[in-house]
Image (cartoon, rainbow, N blue to C red; front, side):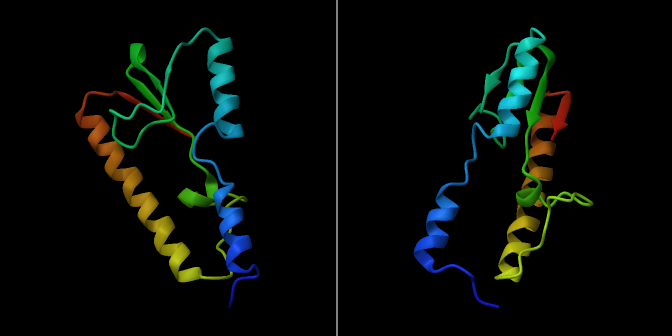
Length: 116
């Protein structure tokens, strides 16, 4: 099946997808801040650049999109009808990277991981 958009439209749509400061991430940050937690954002020194880092508690929080990380059983994860093989490989690789990042962060001494 071919794409329902031309290349220019598809490129524009994809460029609008944010990787930082998404609405779900902002909600989690607002909640944590209101409860008195202080945190660092997108720490480049940590594997996988966690969205939120609570150094005092040795905790990292990843706010992962349902589509990009293929959350099983989630109503927001839908396999695309166009370019399906490419997308399935992309999502599979994202899941592999999540596991690799978890293992490396565990070895670095972090104790708590939260995934949304």
